[in-house]
Length: 413
Image (cartoon, rainbow, N blue to C red; front, top):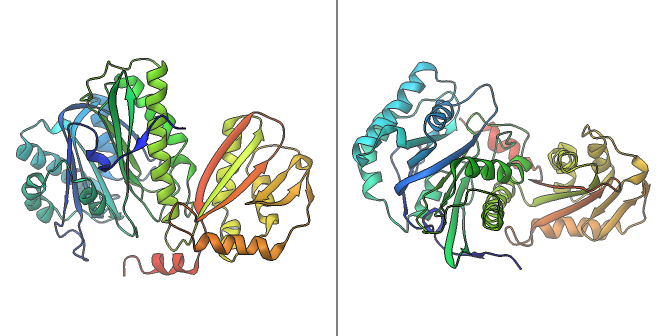
């Protein structure tokens, strides 16, 4: 049994947080496109960002801000334009965004972090953003989590948010999270965005360490199409409003907080993978028996990212040879005589040898996943063993359908 429970509220579930989401006219669709997350008190801030050499201005802006001061009161996010590869004008836009919001909130611009998502090479429609900020601030609410979730999406089919609660020193501690992502998903942090709120008191260095660990076990283990975004951003704020003692070491309380943070990140990561552009099901690959966890995670992510494996899942074809081939090219050495592959309840290979199985029933298993309930019964599970080592790892992705090409072929037209 877990040490936490799911609660309502998303990013506004933790004490001292409010959020909002409005339509500013940044998207041609006239859907919500501007979001704000705000902490009543200055919060400890941590961030993990894209490793791409081509980055959005907001990514470098946040990196610089967090190096200067690892705290913040607000996160402003726009959808519609990525503000990546926009040169000096992109930088001017991030500074203008922070300055305008700081004036309306009456806070220091250095207490504001920024994120953008949308078409690469396009600047933010600054006239619309600037004029919408007063309304965005006026809409701040402790029930604004869903409005925020709606305002940060692009090609997403569903919003993605969660909140968990646990007890630390007999007081409730909450973590809320929201994310967007559907295509250009192969985080290497790490277009993917995620914002986390928490009301625990935690030291700056430990919060950053916890976030990096959680990212490695969640967002860095998903893939939709193998494309790392220019805008990948994961920001976490912890404002201490739970009034629990400060967590400064990885003691029992520290481990409990990190475990809950990881759980929030994994839920959001799987939701992104399941909502992959054109996807019909979630694919989970579990690897065991590797020499270490890093090796296991590498094999798992290679398999779940294989276009051939993804295509086979979409075609409801239990072609285990593609799984074996992906495992073998992952760059991790293992003896093929130790390879074991299982698809759901179907054992396909053991000790490097093919096993007889009911191919039609295995195909039906893949078909049922595509018809299952979102994030509950729609998961194709592949379990791999590569030896007797202690290394274990998981990765999540989705199948590759005809619609993925259609969606991306028409993205800017």
